[in-house]
Length: 121
Image (tube, rainbow, N blue to C red; front, side):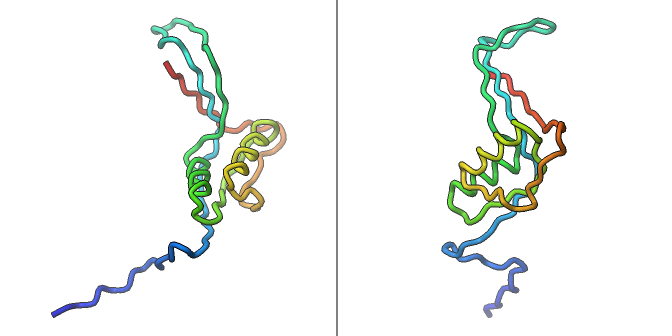
C-alpha cells in the first residue's frame, strides 16, 4: 500500500519564481593584512599589503544570493556610520543587494561598526 507523504510545512518555491530573501545578521569591515610570515609571540612585523572589503556572515550570504540571481536579497543589519558604512553599502549595491529597505540601518554618527582583522601569511 502506498501512503501519501504529509504536506511539507514549508511552501515549495518554483525555480523561476522571483522571491525576496531576507538575510539577518552581521555586516562587517574585513581588514586583510598580508605579512611575509607569522610573527613569533610578542614580536612585530609589517604587513606587505592591506585590503579592506565587506564581510560578515549575513552580508556575504546576501551578496552571494544576489550574484546568483536568487531573487531580491535584503539585509537586516546595522552598518557603521561614515566612510566605513558608505563603503559597505556601495559594495552591497554593486553585488545587487537591495539596500533601500528600512531594515538596513545605519549606526548613529560617530559609532564604529564591527571590524574583522585577518592575518594572511
